[in-house]
Image (cartoon, rainbow, N blue to C red; front, top):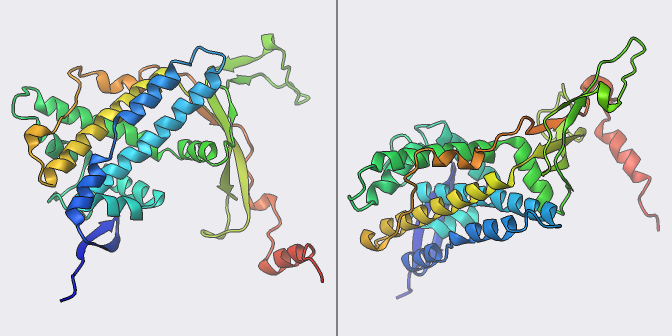
Length: 331
């Protein structure tokens, strides 16, 4: 008799998949046990220790990259937990960044139609946290505060994860380091009747500014484009973001803490004795503000002038092909 492989059926956001394997449970537990939440805390410590050194800008961008990477890991693992706790490895291997972001957005909106294997009628950060932290062994008097803590923490992490400018920044850093390092400030001055501005420091008003940050280019659609999808015409904008190393240090700590708890919850869902699983939490009700504790007057900005449909002469496919044909190598 031919041996039959085991099947796990799940969705990644709204797309169905069937994974076939010889021992789904064993491989799933092997994958879960291989998750190391301490990685991001290690990254935070190593790079923050160099934030006052001559390599401070490199240390700061390494912290920033780790923070973005941590957010991506956090919401990917949360998505797998919600939709495929019995096949975490299959869900993660099949998921794409766009699907993870789309699912996180739906969870943040508390949609009722989200497919999940946790028996939730309405999936939300609070409900995930409530179920996850129900395994605090019954000796925690402030369990509801801990549930709220992580729900609010993940909500604020989602704000950073879903921010388009931060997403573009992360892509610019990880794909070829297409960034200029260092913070930025904006200065303004009054323009006279000749449309000239006196840019001397005494005549200009400076807003914000910080020593750490990045400047990078992002793709933007032509404003007013008649093509909602796959428009060959586009423009770019120069964007700048300031960041605070101390905030990212705390953020990576709470990402590490969250990953530890998700990992423990997944083990329990897959048959591990809850008494052998460790959950981490803070007893400080204000602690979840730490990743955003140090505020800046100026966080991000772009000064490029928009390119609109009226500023361009739209080229058809034939005209574009003819322009490119000139570069064809002839035999």
